[in-house]
Image (cartoon, rainbow, N blue to C red):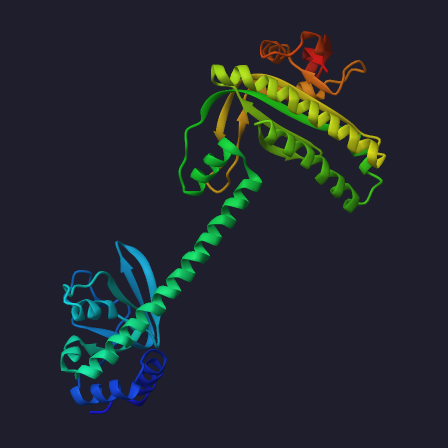
Amino acid sequence: MPLPANVECKLDVFLQQFCPDPTAIQNALERTHLATVLDAIPDELICRRGDRVRGCWLVISGQVEVRADDQMVAFRAAGELVGEQGLVHVLSGKAGTRTADVKAIGPVKLLCIDASFQERLESHEKVIWTLTLASVINHKLEQATGARSELRSLASEHERLLRRFSDGDALGLVKMATRGERPSIQDRRAIIFFSDIAGFSTWSASKSSKEVAAHLSELAAIQINAVRVGGGQIDKLMGDGAMAYWFIDSGDREKCEPAAVLACVRKVASECRTYFEKHGLPLGLRIGLHAGDVAFGDFGAENRIAVTLLGAAVNIAARYEQAKLPELREIRISPTLRDLMVASGADPDTFRGPMKVEVKHGVELDVYSI
Protein backbone atom coordinates (compact mmCIF):
# COMPACT_ATOMS: atom_id res chain seq x y z
CA MET A 1 0.00 0.00 0.00
CA PRO A 2 1.52 3.34 -1.02
CA LEU A 3 2.30 5.95 1.62
CA PRO A 4 0.04 9.02 1.92
CA ALA A 5 1.05 11.90 -0.34
CA ASN A 6 2.12 14.18 2.52
CA VAL A 7 4.30 11.42 3.96
CA GLU A 8 5.84 10.68 0.55
CA CYS A 9 6.60 14.38 0.19
CA LYS A 10 8.41 14.61 3.56
CA LEU A 11 10.29 11.39 2.88
CA ASP A 12 11.40 12.66 -0.52
CA VAL A 13 12.64 15.96 0.95
CA PHE A 14 14.52 14.09 3.67
CA LEU A 15 16.19 11.69 1.23
CA GLN A 16 17.12 14.48 -1.15
CA GLN A 17 18.92 16.21 1.72
CA PHE A 18 20.74 13.27 3.28
CA CYS A 19 20.76 10.29 0.92
CA PRO A 20 23.34 9.86 -1.89
CA ASP A 21 20.79 7.85 -3.94
CA PRO A 22 17.20 8.68 -2.89
CA THR A 23 15.63 6.48 -5.56
CA ALA A 24 17.43 3.37 -4.29
CA ILE A 25 16.12 3.82 -0.74
CA GLN A 26 12.61 4.73 -1.91
CA ASN A 27 12.52 1.57 -4.02
CA ALA A 28 13.78 -0.50 -1.08
CA LEU A 29 11.06 0.91 1.20
CA GLU A 30 8.40 0.12 -1.40
CA ARG A 31 9.76 -3.40 -1.87
CA THR A 32 10.03 -4.30 1.82
CA HIS A 33 6.86 -2.57 3.09
CA LEU A 34 8.69 -1.87 6.38
CA ALA A 35 7.74 1.80 6.70
CA THR A 36 4.48 2.56 8.49
CA VAL A 37 2.73 5.76 9.50
CA LEU A 38 2.11 6.30 13.22
CA ASP A 39 0.10 8.96 15.03
CA ALA A 40 1.17 9.87 18.56
CA ILE A 41 -0.94 11.79 21.04
CA PRO A 42 0.49 14.62 23.19
CA ASP A 43 3.05 13.42 25.79
CA GLU A 44 3.05 9.89 24.39
CA LEU A 45 6.41 8.15 24.71
CA ILE A 46 7.67 7.04 21.32
CA CYS A 47 10.46 5.07 23.00
CA ARG A 48 12.11 4.79 26.41
CA ARG A 49 15.74 4.79 27.35
CA GLY A 50 16.90 1.18 27.57
CA ASP A 51 14.31 -0.10 25.07
CA ARG A 52 15.51 -2.48 22.39
CA VAL A 53 15.96 -0.72 19.04
CA ARG A 54 13.01 -1.52 16.82
CA GLY A 55 13.39 1.20 14.22
CA CYS A 56 13.74 4.92 13.60
CA TRP A 57 11.20 7.66 12.94
CA LEU A 58 10.92 10.43 10.40
CA VAL A 59 8.83 13.27 11.84
CA ILE A 60 6.13 14.10 9.30
CA SER A 61 4.31 16.74 11.34
CA GLY A 62 4.48 18.05 14.89
CA GLN A 63 7.45 17.88 17.21
CA VAL A 64 9.12 15.38 19.54
CA GLU A 65 11.39 15.93 22.53
CA VAL A 66 14.50 13.86 23.19
CA ARG A 67 15.33 13.53 26.90
CA ALA A 68 18.13 11.86 28.85
CA ASP A 69 18.66 11.85 32.63
CA ASP A 70 15.58 14.05 33.06
CA GLN A 71 17.19 16.72 30.89
CA MET A 72 15.98 17.98 27.54
CA VAL A 73 18.55 17.03 24.90
CA ALA A 74 16.87 18.23 21.71
CA PHE A 75 13.63 18.90 19.89
CA ARG A 76 13.04 17.30 16.50
CA ALA A 77 10.49 18.71 14.08
CA ALA A 78 8.98 17.81 10.70
CA GLY A 79 11.55 16.47 8.24
CA GLU A 80 13.99 15.28 10.92
CA LEU A 81 14.96 11.70 11.68
CA VAL A 82 14.90 10.38 15.25
CA GLY A 83 16.47 7.18 16.57
CA GLU A 84 19.02 6.70 13.79
CA GLN A 85 21.90 6.15 16.21
CA GLY A 86 20.29 2.95 17.44
CA LEU A 87 20.20 1.62 13.89
CA VAL A 88 23.87 2.52 13.40
CA HIS A 89 24.71 0.58 16.57
CA VAL A 90 22.87 -2.43 15.19
CA LEU A 91 24.69 -2.13 11.85
CA SER A 92 28.04 -2.03 13.68
CA GLY A 93 27.20 -5.10 15.77
CA LYS A 94 26.72 -3.24 19.06
CA ALA A 95 23.86 -3.70 21.49
CA GLY A 96 20.78 -2.06 20.05
CA THR A 97 19.28 -0.24 23.04
CA ARG A 98 17.90 3.28 23.29
CA THR A 99 20.00 5.90 25.08
CA ALA A 100 17.22 8.47 25.52
CA ASP A 101 13.47 8.91 25.81
CA VAL A 102 11.53 10.35 22.88
CA LYS A 103 8.20 11.99 23.69
CA ALA A 104 5.54 13.61 21.52
CA ILE A 105 5.05 17.34 22.05
CA GLY A 106 1.46 17.74 20.98
CA PRO A 107 -0.03 15.60 18.19
CA VAL A 108 2.72 14.05 16.05
CA LYS A 109 2.70 12.07 12.82
CA LEU A 110 5.69 9.79 12.24
CA LEU A 111 6.96 7.48 9.55
CA CYS A 112 8.42 4.48 11.37
CA ILE A 113 11.14 2.58 9.49
CA ASP A 114 11.48 -0.85 11.07
CA ALA A 115 14.94 -2.03 12.16
CA SER A 116 14.56 -5.15 10.02
CA PHE A 117 14.59 -2.88 6.95
CA GLN A 118 18.39 -2.86 7.18
CA GLU A 119 18.53 -6.65 7.01
CA ARG A 120 16.44 -6.76 3.82
CA LEU A 121 18.70 -4.44 1.87
CA GLU A 122 20.95 -5.51 -0.96
CA SER A 123 24.65 -4.85 -0.45
CA HIS A 124 24.70 -1.63 -2.47
CA GLU A 125 21.47 -0.46 -0.80
CA LYS A 126 22.95 -1.10 2.64
CA VAL A 127 25.92 1.11 1.75
CA ILE A 128 23.57 3.88 0.64
CA TRP A 129 21.45 3.52 3.79
CA THR A 130 24.52 3.57 6.03
CA LEU A 131 25.76 6.73 4.31
CA THR A 132 22.32 8.27 4.78
CA LEU A 133 22.34 7.59 8.52
CA ALA A 134 25.92 8.87 8.76
CA SER A 135 24.91 12.07 6.98
CA VAL A 136 22.05 12.61 9.44
CA ILE A 137 24.34 12.05 12.43
CA ASN A 138 27.00 14.36 10.99
CA HIS A 139 24.38 17.06 10.45
CA LYS A 140 23.24 16.76 14.05
CA LEU A 141 26.83 16.90 15.29
CA GLU A 142 27.34 20.11 13.33
CA GLN A 143 24.19 21.51 14.89
CA ALA A 144 25.39 20.48 18.35
CA THR A 145 28.81 22.03 17.76
CA GLY A 146 27.17 25.28 16.72
CA ALA A 147 24.90 25.16 19.75
CA ARG A 148 27.85 24.55 22.09
CA SER A 149 29.72 27.43 20.51
CA GLU A 150 26.70 29.65 21.00
CA LEU A 151 26.38 28.51 24.62
CA ARG A 152 30.05 29.28 25.24
CA SER A 153 29.55 32.70 23.70
CA LEU A 154 26.50 33.31 25.88
CA ALA A 155 28.39 32.12 28.96
CA SER A 156 31.25 34.52 28.18
CA GLU A 157 28.81 37.35 27.65
CA HIS A 158 27.11 36.49 30.94
CA GLU A 159 30.48 36.49 32.72
CA ARG A 160 31.44 39.86 31.22
CA LEU A 161 28.10 41.29 32.26
CA LEU A 162 28.48 40.07 35.84
CA ARG A 163 32.00 41.49 36.02
CA ARG A 164 30.68 44.91 35.04
CA PHE A 165 28.51 44.90 38.15
CA SER A 166 30.69 43.15 40.73
CA ASP A 167 34.29 42.33 41.65
CA GLY A 168 36.28 39.57 43.32
CA ASP A 169 34.60 38.12 46.39
CA ALA A 170 31.30 39.80 45.54
CA LEU A 171 31.33 38.23 42.08
CA GLY A 172 31.48 34.78 43.66
CA LEU A 173 28.44 35.53 45.81
CA VAL A 174 26.55 36.99 42.85
CA LYS A 175 27.17 33.80 40.87
CA MET A 176 25.87 31.73 43.76
CA ALA A 177 22.76 33.90 43.94
CA THR A 178 22.10 33.49 40.21
CA ARG A 179 22.11 29.73 40.81
CA GLY A 180 19.44 30.16 43.47
CA GLU A 181 21.83 29.60 46.37
CA ARG A 182 21.72 31.75 49.49
CA PRO A 183 25.22 31.92 51.02
CA SER A 184 25.62 32.81 54.68
CA ILE A 185 26.53 36.34 55.69
CA GLN A 186 30.26 36.50 56.44
CA ASP A 187 31.95 38.31 59.33
CA ARG A 188 34.95 40.04 57.78
CA ARG A 189 37.45 42.78 58.53
CA ALA A 190 38.00 45.38 55.86
CA ILE A 191 39.35 48.77 54.86
CA ILE A 192 36.44 50.79 53.51
CA PHE A 193 36.79 53.58 50.95
CA PHE A 194 34.24 56.30 50.19
CA SER A 195 34.74 59.09 47.69
CA ASP A 196 32.80 62.15 46.59
CA ILE A 197 33.40 64.92 44.07
CA ALA A 198 33.19 68.16 46.05
CA GLY A 199 31.17 70.91 44.38
CA PHE A 200 29.75 68.58 41.77
CA SER A 201 26.05 69.25 42.45
CA THR A 202 26.47 73.01 42.14
CA TRP A 203 28.62 72.76 39.01
CA SER A 204 26.39 70.21 37.26
CA ALA A 205 23.19 72.21 37.81
CA SER A 206 24.06 74.50 34.89
CA LYS A 207 25.47 71.81 32.58
CA SER A 208 23.89 69.51 30.04
CA SER A 209 23.23 65.93 31.04
CA LYS A 210 25.56 64.78 28.26
CA GLU A 211 28.48 66.82 29.61
CA VAL A 212 27.79 65.74 33.18
CA ALA A 213 27.63 62.07 32.18
CA ALA A 214 30.88 62.30 30.21
CA HIS A 215 32.82 63.73 33.17
CA LEU A 216 31.23 61.30 35.63
CA SER A 217 32.26 58.38 33.44
CA GLU A 218 35.87 59.54 33.23
CA LEU A 219 36.12 60.21 36.97
CA ALA A 220 34.54 56.85 37.78
CA ALA A 221 37.04 55.13 35.47
CA ILE A 222 39.96 56.77 37.30
CA GLN A 223 38.72 55.39 40.62
CA ILE A 224 37.69 51.95 39.37
CA ASN A 225 41.00 51.35 37.63
CA ALA A 226 43.08 52.52 40.58
CA VAL A 227 41.11 50.41 43.07
CA ARG A 228 41.37 47.28 40.94
CA VAL A 229 45.08 47.77 40.27
CA GLY A 230 45.52 48.27 44.00
CA GLY A 231 43.85 44.94 44.76
CA GLY A 232 40.59 46.42 46.00
CA GLN A 233 37.01 45.70 45.06
CA ILE A 234 34.45 48.24 43.89
CA ASP A 235 31.24 47.92 45.88
CA LYS A 236 29.14 50.51 44.09
CA LEU A 237 29.09 53.83 42.26
CA MET A 238 26.82 56.43 43.84
CA GLY A 239 26.25 59.42 41.58
CA ASP A 240 29.53 61.32 41.80
CA GLY A 241 30.89 59.04 44.52
CA ALA A 242 32.14 55.50 44.94
CA MET A 243 32.49 52.84 47.62
CA ALA A 244 35.25 50.24 47.61
CA TYR A 245 36.92 47.88 50.05
CA TRP A 246 39.94 45.71 50.79
CA PHE A 247 39.62 42.69 53.08
CA ILE A 248 42.28 42.46 55.80
CA ASP A 249 41.19 39.26 57.55
CA SER A 250 44.59 37.58 57.63
CA GLY A 251 47.85 38.77 59.13
CA ASP A 252 49.40 38.94 55.69
CA ARG A 253 46.56 41.05 54.33
CA GLU A 254 46.62 43.35 57.33
CA LYS A 255 50.33 43.87 56.72
CA CYS A 256 50.17 44.43 52.95
CA GLU A 257 46.80 45.97 52.12
CA PRO A 258 47.11 49.25 54.07
CA ALA A 259 50.14 50.20 51.99
CA ALA A 260 48.28 49.24 48.80
CA VAL A 261 45.31 51.36 49.86
CA LEU A 262 47.54 54.34 50.59
CA ALA A 263 49.15 54.08 47.15
CA CYS A 264 45.72 53.68 45.55
CA VAL A 265 44.09 56.74 47.13
CA ARG A 266 47.10 58.89 46.37
CA LYS A 267 46.85 57.82 42.75
CA VAL A 268 43.11 58.55 42.66
CA ALA A 269 43.61 61.99 44.22
CA SER A 270 46.46 62.86 41.86
CA GLU A 271 44.68 61.73 38.70
CA CYS A 272 41.41 63.43 39.65
CA ARG A 273 43.26 66.64 40.43
CA THR A 274 44.96 66.48 37.02
CA TYR A 275 41.59 65.82 35.36
CA PHE A 276 39.96 68.80 37.06
CA GLU A 277 42.80 71.08 35.97
CA LYS A 278 42.87 69.77 32.41
CA HIS A 279 39.15 70.40 31.90
CA GLY A 280 38.93 73.59 33.95
CA LEU A 281 36.47 72.09 36.41
CA PRO A 282 35.90 73.93 39.71
CA LEU A 283 35.74 70.64 41.58
CA GLY A 284 37.58 68.83 44.32
CA LEU A 285 37.80 65.31 45.73
CA ARG A 286 37.08 63.90 49.17
CA ILE A 287 38.07 60.37 50.16
CA GLY A 288 37.17 58.83 53.51
CA LEU A 289 38.89 55.69 54.82
CA HIS A 290 38.39 53.51 57.86
CA ALA A 291 39.11 49.92 58.89
CA GLY A 292 36.94 47.66 60.98
CA ASP A 293 34.63 44.69 61.27
CA VAL A 294 31.90 44.34 58.65
CA ALA A 295 29.19 41.94 57.54
CA PHE A 296 29.67 40.83 53.94
CA GLY A 297 27.07 39.07 51.83
CA ASP A 298 23.91 39.27 49.79
CA PHE A 299 21.49 41.53 51.63
CA GLY A 300 18.94 41.58 48.82
CA ALA A 301 15.61 39.83 48.42
CA GLU A 302 14.66 36.68 46.54
CA ASN A 303 14.39 38.55 43.24
CA ARG A 304 17.07 41.18 43.84
CA ILE A 305 20.79 40.59 44.46
CA ALA A 306 22.53 43.13 46.70
CA VAL A 307 26.04 42.02 47.67
CA THR A 308 27.69 44.64 49.87
CA LEU A 309 29.31 45.44 53.22
CA LEU A 310 27.27 46.53 56.21
CA GLY A 311 28.18 47.57 59.73
CA ALA A 312 29.31 50.43 61.92
CA ALA A 313 32.73 50.52 60.24
CA VAL A 314 31.05 51.24 56.89
CA ASN A 315 29.04 54.10 58.36
CA ILE A 316 32.14 55.54 60.03
CA ALA A 317 34.11 55.43 56.77
CA ALA A 318 31.30 57.40 55.11
CA ARG A 319 31.49 59.97 57.92
CA TYR A 320 35.22 60.44 57.27
CA GLU A 321 34.48 61.26 53.65
CA GLN A 322 31.80 63.76 54.75
CA ALA A 323 34.07 65.51 57.26
CA LYS A 324 34.32 69.19 56.38
CA LEU A 325 37.03 71.42 57.77
CA PRO A 326 39.16 73.88 55.77
CA GLU A 327 42.36 72.39 57.16
CA LEU A 328 41.55 68.88 55.95
CA ARG A 329 43.19 67.63 52.79
CA GLU A 330 41.60 65.41 50.14
CA ILE A 331 42.20 62.05 51.83
CA ARG A 332 40.72 61.62 55.31
CA ILE A 333 41.80 58.65 57.39
CA SER A 334 40.71 57.22 60.73
CA PRO A 335 43.26 56.73 63.53
CA THR A 336 42.67 52.96 63.29
CA LEU A 337 43.66 52.85 59.64
CA ARG A 338 46.46 55.37 60.07
CA ASP A 339 48.06 53.04 62.62
CA LEU A 340 47.74 50.10 60.22
CA MET A 341 49.34 52.14 57.44
CA VAL A 342 52.25 53.15 59.65
CA ALA A 343 52.66 49.52 60.71
CA SER A 344 52.80 48.54 57.03
CA GLY A 345 55.65 50.96 56.38
CA ALA A 346 54.09 54.39 55.83
CA ASP A 347 56.01 57.40 57.15
CA PRO A 348 54.13 58.80 60.18
CA ASP A 349 54.87 62.32 58.91
CA THR A 350 52.71 61.57 55.87
CA PHE A 351 49.61 62.10 57.97
CA ARG A 352 48.43 65.50 59.10
CA GLY A 353 46.52 65.62 62.36
CA PRO A 354 44.58 64.31 64.02
CA MET A 355 41.96 67.03 63.92
CA LYS A 356 38.63 66.85 65.70
CA VAL A 357 35.74 67.24 63.28
CA GLU A 358 32.04 67.16 64.01
CA VAL A 359 30.02 65.25 61.42
CA LYS A 360 26.39 64.14 61.16
CA HIS A 361 24.27 63.83 64.29
CA GLY A 362 26.87 65.62 66.38
CA VAL A 363 29.37 62.76 66.10
CA GLU A 364 32.96 63.92 66.65
CA LEU A 365 35.80 62.21 64.81
CA ASP A 366 39.58 62.34 65.04
CA VAL A 367 40.67 62.77 61.44
CA TYR A 368 44.06 62.40 59.82
CA SER A 369 44.46 63.72 56.30
CA ILE A 370 46.99 63.63 53.49
